[in-house]
Image (cartoon, rainbow, N blue to C red; front, side, top):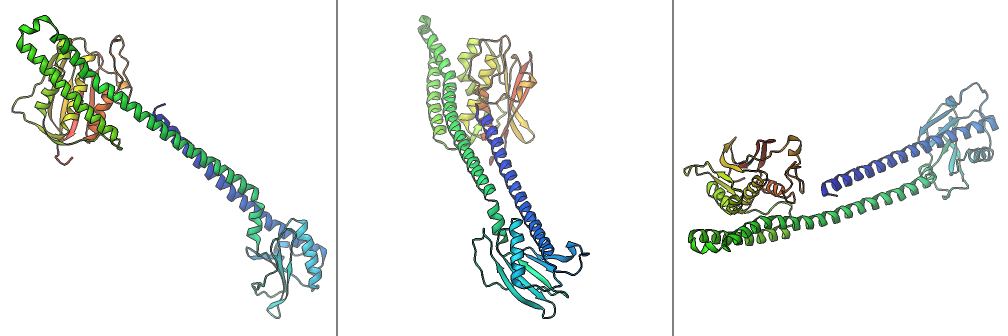
Length: 424
């Protein structure tokens, strides 16, 4: 599984985990609201039961909602017209609260309208309460009638205790989900590190394959008996071997730099590069393969067309070599044109061939690692699908872009667009 696919799976899993946590928090809030409403309902039922147990009002025509107020979350105020001893009211009220499962302590106070204060206050304990009587001053709400005040000082704590099962199950779920997220993170990290190692080996193989192929062809030419009588040709292929050896040494150093670098971008060192000279050097390195394929390579660049680019010479040359290699691979009788010029304030390098072309549906995936375009009847083309990916990395490191113009059966043009500014 490639890192991009795994990254999407980890992202989707993370989103799913966050959604589950959000839903769980939503339901915890819903349960808390439900418990609050249930508490209110049970308290009102208890007060109604108290009205049925003793005649606190003279007339029964009043609706219950007209007799009961809730001026504050923890306070319940209900009207009384007839006085009853506090012990009787406390006893009946405690019984009603227990019947309706209001199992937390409360304070009862009798407010007299004439004195504008409570005549008495009484603590009502509960079997499930963990708290004792405290010195609490009940809030006074001035009314024109007498009333009984019922105050629950530990209401929220009691409701939260009722939700213990939900809290424990949610905590277990959160621990499991967080553990799963940590496992996914470390799994992705290990897969990523393994992929980086694999990519390095594959890149290493790819970057050495072409120079070794050139050296092999050059060695075969140098081993021919008649080469001794052709000093110019001998010097030419010996120079090619020397250049390729130097190229391999440079690539070893570059790959070691990439391996040591913690960055995903290529480490580049920019300087002024004459493009015509760079292209000619890249073509010279590919000359043995060009000769073998009997290819025609044209560089329609005038000597006075002295375009220079602020770039990493070695990497940019490597990008051109990779494009040349692809053009030679996918053409029966290769005819390659390499040109340069200005475009929209940038500088372009164009590599155009007469190969088999690339269908539009494959072009978006062309620069992905290990992706190889189906080649139809061409079965002898080898490679790891890394060349164009490496070209893309080089151009991205220069903050440039790549354009592809291709027609199946006609050919393909790769146009490297690079910033002309020295500070890019």
